[in-house]
Length: 222
Length: 222
Image (tube, rainbow over all chains, first blue to last red; front, side):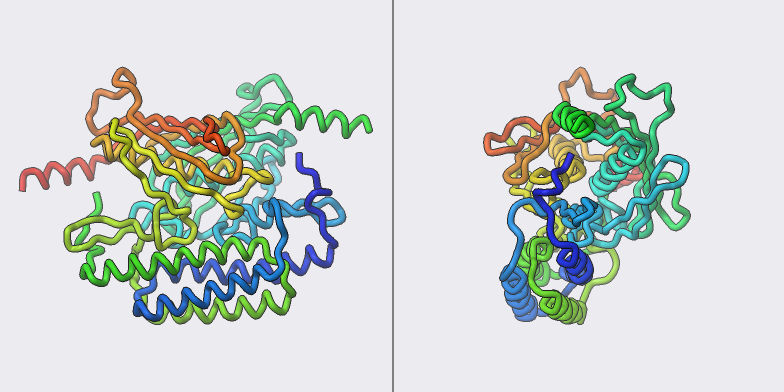
């Protein structure tokens, strides 16, 4: 459903920005966490701010315009660099890497630190929903049922401690699936705490929009 | 449900960190966006990364330990500095400021840029759920029905364009409310696009946990 031509760049450029840009974003994750916790003097906070503004200007000396959420290499491989869940160049993203579980489902693990905190010592409930929305969507794609989230229901069983979390998703049982092949019901969950116990359950309904189905049909004909 | 004593600091310290720390976090928001878009040389990306690491170390020279999501001033006012939705010192947060609408509900507005992108040019569905989870929770608090999110259902009507969004939440009609005063059903929505049309609807079920009700009762007695 993405037009790679719109976002294509030479492979060498793609690879170097993934590598060097990814390491830069990782350093900014550390900066984000330090800004929340720092208790240095007001003068020092202001001095650091001026340096951050100067670094931002240096990065802006050359930049891509338009949508940056997804880029493609020459093979048409898509990389969601700027995605707030999986984007390796987006300091907001933990980032997670969604893996196939070999049984038709997907999983991912990450460690959530202070910048994801809602109730003291615990992950903000909305962060759990952000991660689950994404993992259920990737699970639908992995199951051959790509689509946009039409609805998502989250059931919060236990507060999620800051620290390691595991996310899982798979197609709901066949008797819960709609008849149309472009719709899918996904189940998923977030496990947390040192023992990775069940904290949040998710059920998502995914639908491939009509314009995307029409385009798929056209691609198959051409 | 938070013990202010655990997070208290002198008012002067509280105010200066809010002010100077908040401005620093705002500058880091610009840096996060620039990292995603930058196409400067690999050497320059590496040089900026080393500078970011040095700034992080300067901020870490003095920092608070433990939970930083919520701090209190001497009046017991709580400030969620590190919150990923409203935290003015958290560069992940837009941040939003939730306001009373004068009719029992709440609203907030913000502008979502490239670091919140999922589908090209559009807000990641999970970001909509992150913001709605928080606004519905604040709406429950404003309506005198504070609680934790027990469940949240999001219905995605239209893709949300990057740009201005408005969030609203209020108690669901009385005939949809549970009998117990420590439970609440909230309705909310995200409006987006230049005309702020309806994009996402949310229904949330909030429950104040038993330990918090017991503590409230003890506070009222003492």
